[in-house]
Length: 136
Image (spheres, rainbow, N blue to C red):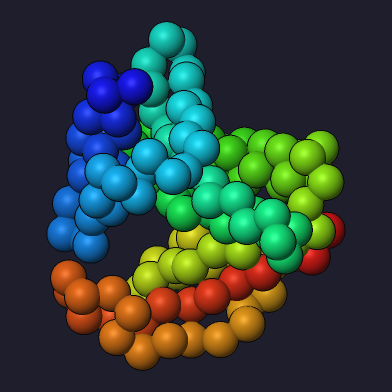
């Protein structure tokens, strides 16, 4: 676990270098998954289970920049939805930076809707978050 935890943190920082970073304690609470292509870790996602509300929170979804715009994000999003359905979740929820138009558009392609925008949600850099939800 410690070695994989470090790999997740390092990977996340490669994708989101200027963004707020998760602390190791947060990663330990999440269920994390890798996306491999040709034996290379090209993507990662992490879930925080919120079973009381039967909601699965997508804590992060990231594809390495050199593998973006090749369908890996769509593949991972479809898998996240299938995972949630298979495990009996009623909702998928996630936050995206307001400036992350590609992730917001990808979520909308899969039926997510914007619930609200939260100003100053992210600290580095200061930016609003868009909370999105998909009811299953």
